[in-house]
Length: 409
Image (tube, rainbow, N blue to C red; front, side, top):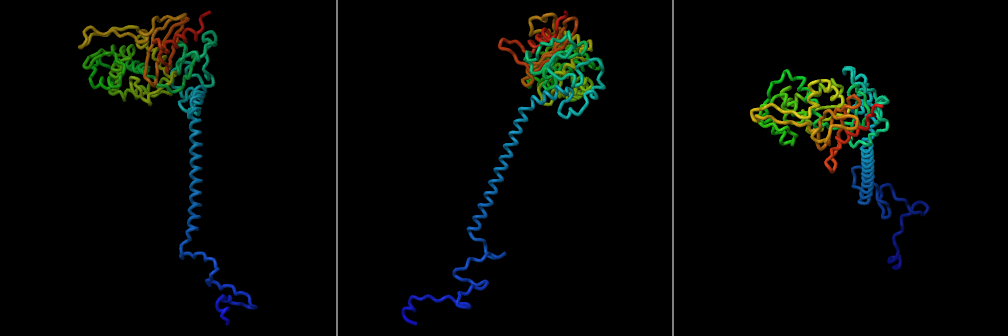
């Protein structure tokens, strides 16, 4: 070998047959061979392989998160759409199926529900397909077909002939509302029905009064320790909406107000008030204490059949008997008549009524009027007060009595 070849020549690759370069044997390592794939249980993947796997898993996680987000957004959009549609849908359902308290009521026969209800209050129990719109419903010649419920400011209202039970007009008559002190119509009716079982006088204890003071309940003004005649409590509950009178009567009838509420609910079912639930005797707000204006109309018509109730309901002013704490007695003025200048309206007059108010319920009114030698009731809830002090509930009642009923020709 020459010095030149010794300095610059590289070793010749091994020669195979016919002088070609030999292929590496299986498992043999050469400078140019690619790294072998790791065997199970062998060496760890390379950094590049792990990074690619991480990026792939990360992309998949991001895609899943985006899919979940899109689903949540879609669900929220559906929810808000249902919330916006709930009012109109509920009103439509209840107008089509007035005896149903929920969508499940669509599958319950309203006729079957009222089989046990005494006959006599006709149109308040008419089948849904015969009483389906907020328009005058009674026979021609009595209801004014041109009177629209849009003229009423009440969120829910109903006008009916008290002699026949025929509904003349209604607005949201079957939607759930809070009755506020219209509750005391039932409280007083039950007290009158149990009057023979009650003591002549009931002592108003501090324990009875204190929760009412704390709840800012309307009071008739009787004092702790005062022994009040039961009859005076009846008048105080209905005329002045006295919370202490209502609770005292409830406890006298049933032992506790909670037990009295159970009696109220049982009686409500007997009256066909299937969309009503009572939790107290006063009407103080409770989400589970609710009704409809149609149900209150049923209650009022039944109550007015009781002569003693009708007498109290139509009393403008009443003087209580002397008590151990008030030897002169008290003058109880009906809240309704205290708020109107005159009980007369075009063609008739208002005979009696029960007012009510809580913030969730708004101004409420259940009243009785006389026109065309007939008697009518008007029940409304969800009213406010005008800037000049006019109660919308009273204005709606006068409007309905004057314009919702045609004069005799």
